[in-house]
Amino acid sequence: MALSDKTFLHAFQKQAARTPQRIALSDATKVTITYGQAQKYANYVSQKVTEAGVGRGDIVALFLGRTAFFPVAAIGVFQAGAAYMPIDPRYPDSRIEFMLEDSEAKVLITSRDLESHTAAYTGTVLYAEDLWVEQEATPEPIVDGNDMDYIIYTSGTTGKPKGVMNIHKGLMNLIDFYAEELNFNEQDVSGVYCSFGFDVSVMQMFPFLAKGAGVDIVPTEVMLDMQALSRYTNDHGITTMHLPPSIVKFFDPFCENTTLKSVVAAGDRLTYGPGRNFLLYNMYGPTETSVIMTSLLVDKEYENYPIGKCVKNNCGYIVDEYMNLVSEGEAGELCFAGIHIGTGYLKRPELTAEKFVKNPFSSDSE
Image (cartoon, rainbow, N blue to C red; front, top):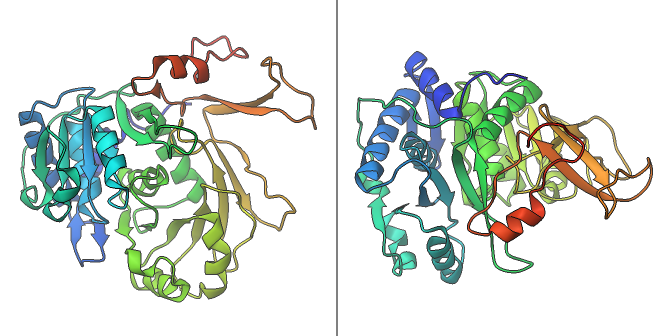
């Protein structure tokens, strides 16, 4: 199935030119950024990282708090032809140091209140406080669908964290699928609940910015207070939001707001549903893909909630240890294929060769 645009960047630039006065981003600090401003700020970010030597295929680390400037910085990185790597400020300093060293990020974009956590970094540091500058000239996109867009590091629970490389065509397919599945438009607002270091944040930001909707960064202080979270969604006009499955069952009884239309549960096993006042989707996908591979609209209670069907331009197989398809009802390992599959683990060719294998059930080259 054809994609609506070549990359997110192509879609965003067209949207910013068409609706420059529409609010694109907001956060708890009362910052609001229009599409036109977001484009101009991203232009300046792109200029500064390019001047620092960043080019196509390079990596830029984003070490920022829950600010509306984060997606702006990511767009600027895309315009420079590079990929962004998010670092959560809550990570231990040892993990931050490891990610910066392992990724060989050429540039680090951070804020001055966080600089003590990156003292060992020897690359170029740009401070977000200095990047709120409007640059009129918008560069033509130099990325295509096969270029790397972001790197997410795994948790490292089974060893050292690994940087997973994902690409633009997977993100663009995700954008098209998500817009169709949730049926959102320019009047909708996505609430970014999860950490920028978690790949679900990709799904909460870029589909909406590609389609002219709003993105609101939910503040930390309301995340675990269900009444406060419900009030926040109502006060900020949030119409869709991702929540961890463990939070959904606590949030639902308190959700009496008038704006929320849909909630996406992803990242863990769902044990509750459907929602009383919103549509609930159960979605699943490993870090090695463009966020999700399967989706289910939860319209009834289940003893075991299914993860749904594969999203468009992707497929899944249940196989045995010899990569043979198992019969219906038999246990096996779930393997995915399709446009959302990433390109591998950064600087780990042996592990990439082991986990990212040619699809034996397809005649395609991938």
